[in-house]
Amino acid sequence: MSTIFNALNIGYTGLKTSQVAIDTTSHNISNAENPDYTRQRTVIAPQTPLNTTPGDVGLGSQITEIVRVHDEFVYKRLKEASNDKEYNQYRQDKLDEISSYFPEIDKNGIYNGMQEYFNAWNDFSKNTDDSSLKVNLAESTKTFTSYISDTYEQLESVQASLDEELKLAVDEINRLGKEIADINKEINRNEAAGNHANDLRDQRDKLELALSKLVDISVSKDDPTSDMTVDRNLFESGDDYHLNIGGSSFVDGGTYHPIKFEPAGAGSKYGSIYYEQQDGKTFDISDFIHGGKVGAILSLRGKSYDENIGKFTDGDIQKVLDQLDSFAASMIVETNNLYAGHATTEMEGNYTFRTSQTIGDQQLPIKDGSFQVKVYDIDGNVVAQREIGVSRDETLGEIADKFAEDIDDNEDNVNGNDIDDILNAQVKDDGNGNGVFRIDLTDEYKDKGYTFAIEETDPQNPTDFAGALGLSRFFDGWDEGTFYQGAAKRISLSSELDNNPTLIGGNATPVAGDNQLANRMVQLQYDKVDFYMGDKSEPFSHETFDSFFRASVTDIANVTAAAHTQNDSSEALLNSVVQEFDSISKVDIDEELTNLMKYQTGYSAAAKVITTVDQMIQTLLNIKQ
Image 1 (tube, rainbow, N blue to C red):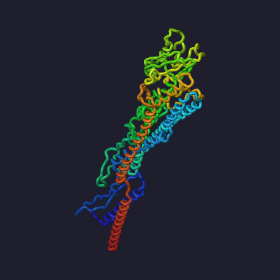
Image 2 (tube, rainbow, N blue to C red):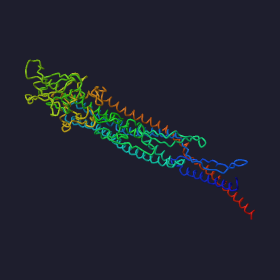
Image 3 (tube, rainbow, N blue to C red):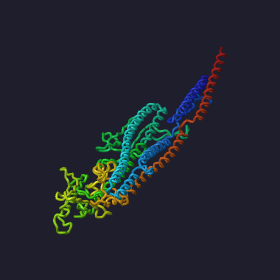
């Protein structure tokens, strides 16, 4: 039954409703500058009325719920756009740094060093007996090789720093995952009574967004619910929560499963990202991560680690390192192969190989064909010459045996003046199945002033036998690793020539004024040579040093330019999504101030109702008196 006290209660509910609405509006205004806050709105509804005659009598208002204006679909696009932007921004920054290590436009760096190196050979070819030109060549060579090795070490340093950043990123991912799981527990406790844990959901969204910038994630929160009576943009998620990384469960409600950062392979100094199953077994999930900062790090550093060769087989930085190795290795092999044409008294390779394996099994850059062994007397005359055939199906021991074959090289029917009489060729075995190739004069000819040299039968199709084994070296560096690996880091002027540059030879025959070898070195810059990549013994490219290096630098420039373009596109997309998200969820001060005045007016009106009812009660009491 409606009474005067009902009117007093109605006024009280109006005060209470307006007070909660003012509190919510004040909460919005105080968090207007909080980038992670979602504006909230009170839902006001009438209380259940009294069912009387002649009709229902209202009992005032009530706050049924306080909701945040959040669109789960737009928020998902925001996470995806943030993930993409972080990926492209990080790649752009690192590729800019890598590009700075190739300052070719400033007449500095590897390319300029190579030009100065060949120019020094050209100067040397004009007078191969001039010691000052030999010293100049040595200095130009050391400058050139230092550019290569310094650039390589800088890139390795970047690769190592990326690995450190990856480790820190994994720690950060685990920290965020644990916080999300803890917040999920709080949300479940707070919403058990049917209320909305709006601020806790904002905190979880903040952590999700931070996590999406680190790594691509997929989140399932039940089917979102919509309430058009509150706001057409309100699409809130449900209670069931699952977050996956790389297809593996990372957060499941209030439980999180940490990922691990462990060695990428046996003996690897680099790490990879692993997921541990319930049975304790771990598996690498790096290949399933493609976005965010972590995805960018993996794309730059490399994901797939090959234990057999001790390096990554992918990654932008690894590709540049491989190209530098290929460039340096071919420079070493081709230069040393020509330098074997400088007459000397002995040659001993520095490349260690398995004596029982064929050349093909060694995966050495030696090709089928033949080379000429020439022996000179003290006057520079050729006194013996033999063509040695090379097949990749042969062992190096079998090649050495061809030097000892009893052949009348001079076709003079005279014994004792042929290659097998003058030279010893052997594979020096260390007793463990490893050996090096060695050629020297027999005892009979060591004191006669004889020298020998190795030249290709067909310079346009060289076997690269002497260069691959390092029989006579102008460059050091081709002495370890898998095929070409690490050549750019180790390339240097041979230690013997570095200690005494006057020993540098530019002559093929042991005759003063001969400049044949120096001229061949000058010509090398214009010749097409083979370049190798990976652990393959077949060349992947046949071109000049100039074109190979320019193509490599152009490739770096193109990748960097593409990163800039992709970053600009992702930034534009992110800005668009942020604007859409902010228009839905961010606080509008003008709107909130309007609401504040509206609720203040409602509060004053409700107070007026109470005052009026109070006056009515006082009137009734006065009548009774």
